[in-house]
Amino acid sequence: MFYILISVKNLSKTYSNGVAALKNVSFELEPSCVTGYIGINGAGKSTTMKILCGMLDFDSGEVHVGDLRLPDYSTKVKQITGFVPESPELFNSLSVSEFLDFIKDIRDIEKSVFEHRKNYFAGLFGFTEYIDLPIGKLSKGNKQKILIVSSIIHNPDVILLDEPLNGLDAFTILTFQDMVSKLAKKGKTIFYCSHLLDIMEKVSDRIIILDKGEVKINETKASLKNSSDFKSLESLFRQMKEDNSQKEFSYGEVFS
Image (cartoon, rainbow, N blue to C red; front, side):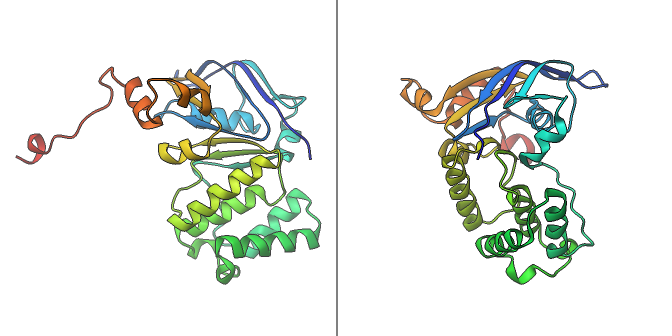
């Protein structure tokens, strides 16, 4: 197993429509650590994820995944990375087994190793009975389970999670949280993006908060909790939005 330190320095990305998604973003992601990445919609989180896994170029700055510089070594970075995207595209006409076989081939996993892992994860996430069904016939939650398994079945050293809990039931979420914590303890470098602040507070060792493409907070969870004015991630997030960008529902105003 390799222990991968990810270094991001002054990363900037502006899209062709003029939207500046990232503005001189800098941070480090350490192995054996779950780093939570938090921000409102459009803050630049998914853009960061796509850059780190070699899917998207950037305008300026430096990104190193271990000793691999992006975008020069994007193919090698993809080989050691598992990525759960926010908006997945799966081959709905393939059965679950056929899709995972496809992952086996592109990840070059030895057949007996693959079969053991496939059967284990099917039992862990409860899709054994769906293994021969077309993916298109699965529920949203079961599709998400297949996506998660396909991202880690090759035992990657770097794991990027962009809203990985979409559609999952409560028991699967608990299983997933436990798995993420144990993977971190095995030396994995885990970057975890979610809007679920309570879960992020539970599983993360470090918290990075992104706002309009800029890093506003980058602290270990321990240092945040030792702060005298820290109550929870939710309260911290609310404090950052005291510029009235957070709207408040008024029943009387709309239904009176």
